[in-house]
Every structure is written in structure tokens, then in C-alpha cells.
Image (tube, rainbow, N blue to C red; front, side):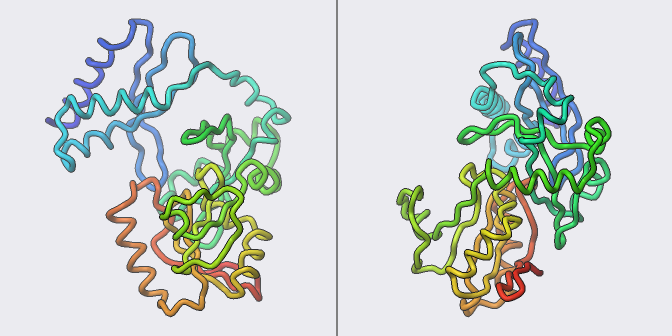
Length: 294
């Protein structure tokens, strides 16, 4: 089955499944680390927001996981209902800067892989990454709704990038509280809440936020990162495991950076979706200088 036939069949099935007044559309949408992808939206009557479902991902799984069309269609419906909002939101608030300024957050993406996207959005270079900004609409366990801030939004609000950075630097740590736990505790299934940072049989720690959403941005929490180095009593390596989390390894480890880089590339190629990749090499935190490098 060709992709175009898959898309046509999918739209036909969906139109038969939902009431006639449901708006079902496919649009080309920019996505992290990738060229524009086709996103499916299913906007039911009475709602003004809907999750975006990237249908090319499901088409590719038909080949890689030997799905037939009915399996792909079922997974699309399941994912839609899992992320479908229960009610509309008032998007008019986005027109007034005073209404959004407390919800402006930052995240990290790879700069070179997102050159086209960065032409359209305010950003700040950070190592080989870019700090970009979004407005958090709501955040719940396992799902969040956000609006990526565009250059046009700055004109609408009459502000500049330094102002965005200032607000995001205040808001993000408050809304997205940092969490750093030993990897061994995560793997063992022990509860993480309220547990102190303690030695681990493997000197590997998972740094993210409580929502586990864009958690790599915790690298920008300068005071928190420095306090971690004091607890480790050493510098540390940073493995960019995804845009949602990074791994920290105290520099007392005998592993060489080249070994980390090989591991990172293998994980990026085999374990992550393209839009989840942050970078393909290790970073280093020098606690005496309080700075990151690569």
C-alpha cells in the first residue's frame, strides 16, 4: 500500500466513524528535527482543540512492525481518544500578553537539525542547541497542550527575546520542577517522590522535570545544576538521552567521552523517535566554572 493510498483510506474510514459535523483534516506541520510532516486533526463538534496525529509514523510502522491497515487505523483511533481533550479552551487569552506571560516556558532543541524552524521562531543559541519558547496551555500526567511561540507573537505582544528568556527563566522551574534520581531506583520501581539523592550502584542519574515533558530544559536551571555538582562532589558528564530527560554521570567514572558518544548515537538511531532526539554527543559540566561545554 502506498502512502497516498494509506492516507486516502484512512480519511475515508475516519469520516465513516465520526459524525458528519466532525472536521477531519491533514496539514503539513513542522516538527522537531524533521522536515514538515503531515498531521491529522479530528475536531469534533463542541471542541476547538484537538491532538495532532502524525500519520506518517503509523504508515512506517506498517512496514517495520508488519501492521496491516486495520491495525494502523486502530492505533490511530486509540491514540486520538487517549489524548482527546474533554472540553474546549478559551484561546482568546493568547491575544493579550498579560494573560500568557505567566505561562511562557523554554525547552531545548538541536540547532542544526532545526535550521528552517528556527527562522520562524524566537530562540537563543545554547552550545550546539537552541533555547526555544512555548506557552503552556495545560499540563496533566502523560499529556500536555502547548503553543510554540512564533516571531509573529512577539510583534503581537510588543516584546523581545530577552523578555521571553526572563519570563521563561522564572516560570519554567516553577511549573516544571526539576527531578534528579538515581537510574537504579527508577529501574527498580521504587517510588521517587520525596526520596533524597543518594549513591547508586551505577553512578548514573536521570535529570528531568516532574512532568517528564521537555525535561532536558532542566540543564538551564543553573542553581539546581550547581547544587547537583556539590552533591556529586565532582564534575559530571551529561548524556542527552532525549528532549525529555538527560543522564548525569559523575566525572569520576572511568568511561571515556568517546564511549559515551558511540552509545548516544546508537540509542538515537535505534531507540528514539526522530522528534525526541536532543543531540548525538556528550556534554560536560565543570563545577569550578559553573558551565556546560561539549
